[in-house]
Image 1 (cartoon, one colour):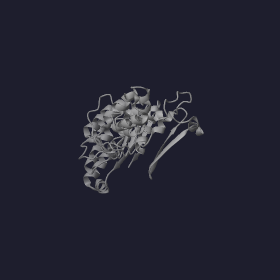
Image 2: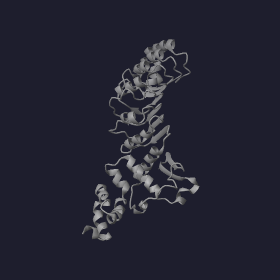
Image 3: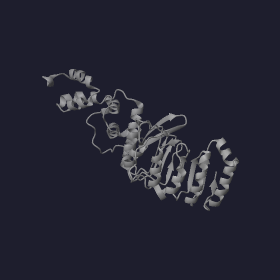
Image 4: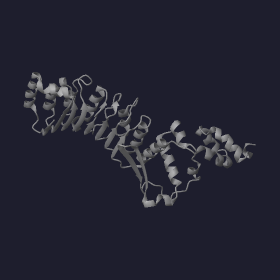
Length: 336
């Protein structure tokens, strides 16, 4: 009896399952009649369903590929590329290009249905994130990646997408990203373990567990401006990078990170550049830094103005500067 139901009846019934993709997928397998009537329901809110269900970023990437396959050859061959640009705010913009190498081939098999015609609604940012993940996954020689304003919902998928470039990605930078309740270093351990440059700029407090011993052993540049990891995590990073670390930007407030500069100096003796935010009682650690890191070329010491004035006007610190003069590396070119 069910196979004799009209298309209108089946569509009405299937519409009650529009948020249940698993049931709709099972309807596709009953027979051709059911399949033809279930497909439009299944594909009318695809980005919403995949964003709120148990779907991976890889699944959403396949959605983009499927929709691109529905484009006509004329659409894909305009100026040999399709440009997708997103202006997120007045201070910056981001853009992406689908070139001939990443657009669907003119020789590929046409889709069974015109899936794009079934789409009845979507959230712009869900599509935007899906396209971004798709671009990342399609790359096989990505060496540098910078992300602005990443959300806590978006970031795990982005990092997983980066795993396809494991071994080739060398430069990774996050700016103003929200890592609330996320542990990015653990995620990056598998996805990007061979990074040479890692930057977290103005990302606030970030939690972390123990980092595996093989992580980030090739790290040359570590920039944590405006970002705070637990002290034991930083010490682990220093020990992993060891003699490879050449440049670092770090907050070294003695209350948050006691003796952190001394630990950095002991683990990373080949540093050539350090930008550090120190309180007045942390200046004494510079002696250890100068003695251990004999290849230093640039030192930038930052702090609140009263602390900096105090540093250079008190007798104790005057004596400290005299002592530092005796151990300043001969390679030093800039001290600010």
